[in-house]
Length: 162
Image (tube, rainbow, N blue to C red; front, side, top):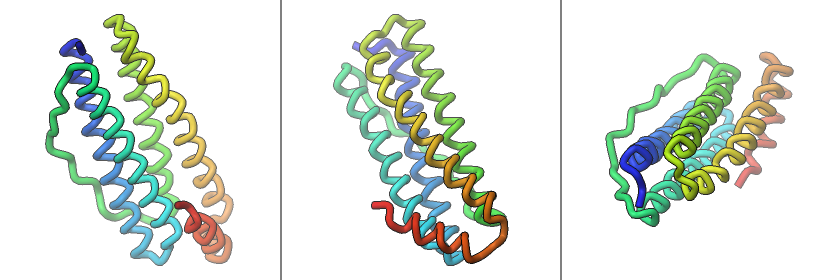
């Protein structure tokens, strides 16, 4: 049975993961609107991953004797000032999510909730990958500056993500 503090924190994280999906869909729409559909595709796939993360936590809450509770999801912004600015936000957001996961792990440790600690271990590892992927793309964008050719080449590359 989940302790109330753990259950509440996990429910907050479900909401945050759903927000992440909304954010990445908003970014996908933005990139599509500036004719960088490959970036849009990459972010749509990222949004699906965030939905999977939310469902993983949702299922865990129920499996561990708690009750998933849905709350309102904050609306993300819808416009950015260029490809670099938007992807810098992707990296910053993933870094913030890493902090949230670490806070959940700290709470599980404090509450001596070994099952939740074990469950959260997957997310800790996942966040390393998430930050690396976003950081690698941002580095490439920064190398290109405003040069359209290399940016469109990266866009074609990102379009391959399924």
